[in-house]
Amino acid sequence: MRLINNGFCKQLPRPEYSSFDKYKSSTNWFEVFEVEKNIWAIYEAFQWSEVISYLIVGTQTALLFDTGNGIDNINDVVSQLTDKPLQVLNSHSHFDHIGGNYQFKEILSPSSAFSIKNSQGNHSQQVKTEASS
Image (cartoon, rainbow, N blue to C red; front, side, top):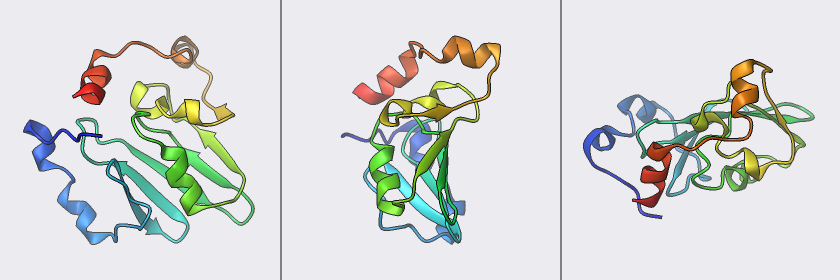
């Protein structure tokens, strides 16, 4: 995978993230930070929308809050962080929050007209351009 690093992306990742330790599950696409005990920020640092998904691991189950752009395999990253049963919750249905939904069996999401309309996905030239560059 070729990462785009021009224009806006030259400023990424944000300097604020230097206060967190980058976790060993980081990849060429995702940077993973443990921001609190059992709470990880899974950050898509090298693209224009700076998507952050959160993994919260409880005593019996785990919750993935948003699945990002879907450009790389967030499920692989999550599997490295926990083996607990996982639920996925989308905050809303913009493409940069639901892109990785296809990697999971069941997705929870707010039921709104916008979410229902976008539940089947949508064409986004920006994501297509980003992924093919």
